[in-house]
Image (tube, rainbow, N blue to C red; front, top):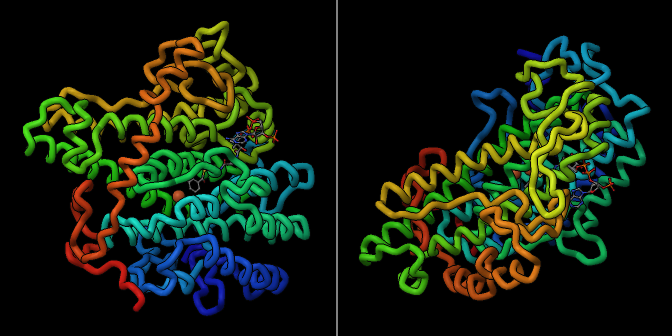
Length: 482
Ligand code: BYC
Ligand code: FE
Ligand code: FE
C-alpha cells in the first residue's frame, strides 16, 4: 500500500497523517474541535441538525473507493484530515527551486506568504457554509436538500484541511489563525470573510446552483494551482480536496440543467414560442431564461473578482517561490520559470478593452482566470444545447469579463454584458437589464417553497436523471427529526 493510504478511523479525528504519533498536533486539533462544532451548529445549516442525512463520508484516499454512504446526523459527520498519497521522490516543478526535492516543511523565508495563502483558502470554506445556511428551509426536494448538506459538510472538511496545515506547520501563529477562521462571518460588518464574493448573500436555490457552478469552480482552479506547490503537505491536501470538489460543481451544473429543462418543457406545453415573454413564462411558475441570464451575469462577475488583479506581484512571487503554480503546471511544455515569457492580458485603456502582452510571471492570475473562463464556457454550451434542441432561438452567454467588476483593471468600468462600452449613466439606467432586479428576486423567492416528499420536486426544477449512490427515485435522502 503506498505511503499515506492507510486511514485511521478510530479516534475523534479520522486521518491518514499519523495523528496518534503527533501528540502536539493532536492536542491543537482537539482543542480547536469544540469551537468548530459550535460554529457548525450556530452558523452552519439552520435546522436539520438532528435529521438523518444520506451522506458520503471520506474514509480513504484510494481514488477507486474513498467514500462510504450512509445516514448521519450532520454534527456527527466524521470530519477528517486526509491527504492524497505521497508521490515517491516528488520534485518541485516550477520557479526558482525547480528540480529540488519537494519540501516536507516550510522554508523560513516563505512562511508569511504561505500562511497568507492558507488563510485565504481556509476562509472561503466556512464562508460558503454560512452563505448557504438558510437554504434548507426551501429545498426543492429531499435529493437537493441532501446535496446541499453534502456540499456543506465537505466545505467544513476543507476548513479542517487548512487548519491542519496551519496548526502543524505554523505553531502559535497557525493556532491563532485557526481561531480567527471560526471568528469571521460571511457578511459581518465587523468581522467579514476575506474575499468579496464570500460576503454576498446566497438567497435562493438558483443562486446556490450558480454559486456551486461558478464559485466552487474558482475553488477547483485555485486548489489545482496550489496542488502544484513545492510544499508537499499542501499539494497532497489539495489533491484530495479536488476529489470532493467535483461533486460540488456537478450539483451546480446539473441544477441549472434541470431548471432549464423544466422551463423548456413548460414553455412548450403552453405553446410559448418567445422565451423572453417573461410574464407568460412566469405565469407557468418556472424560471424564465432572461432571469437566469441576469443571475448568471451576477455570479460570474462576482467570481471573476476572486482571481485578483490581472497583473499581480503577489502571484509572481508565489510562483517563483514555488508556492502556487499554474493550472496543470505539470502538463505545460515550457521552462516553468517564465523569466522571459509574456502572456496576453486584457487591459482597460482610455475606455477601451485591449489585449496587451505582459510579463507572464505578473500575469498568472489572468492566466488562471482564462483557464477558468474556458471551463465555464463548456458548461454554458451544454445548457444551450438543450435550449436549441427544444427549438428555441435563445442562447445563454457568459458576460464580458469586464462587466460588473470590483477588482482588477475593469473595476468600475461601465461595460455591458455584451462587451459594449457605455457611459456610467447609461450603464446605471440599464442595470436592471444586466443584473437581477428586486422584482426578479421577489419572483424567485415566490417559487422557493420546500418539497419534502420523497421523489417529488418543486415545479420549477426537473428531477435528476439518476439518484445519488444509484438510489431509486423515491429514496428518502433526508429523514426529518421528529
Ligand atoms: N476580495 O495582488 P492581488 C474556494 C486583495 S474559492 C477582496 O491581485 P493576489 C471555495 C488581495 O488579497 C478559492 N480582496 O492578489 C469556493 C491583495 O491584498 P493584500 C479560494 C481581494 O494575491 C466555493 C490585494 O487585493 N482560494 O475555495 O495575486 C466554496 C491585491 O490583489 C480580492 C484562493 O483564493 C477579492 N476578490 O490574488 C468554498 C487561493 N482579490 O495582500 C470554497 C488563495 C484580491 O495586498 N488565494 N484581493 O492585502 C490566492 O491565491 C490569492 O490571494 C488571490 C488574490 C487569488 C485570492
Ligand atoms: Fe471547498
Ligand atoms: Fe466546493
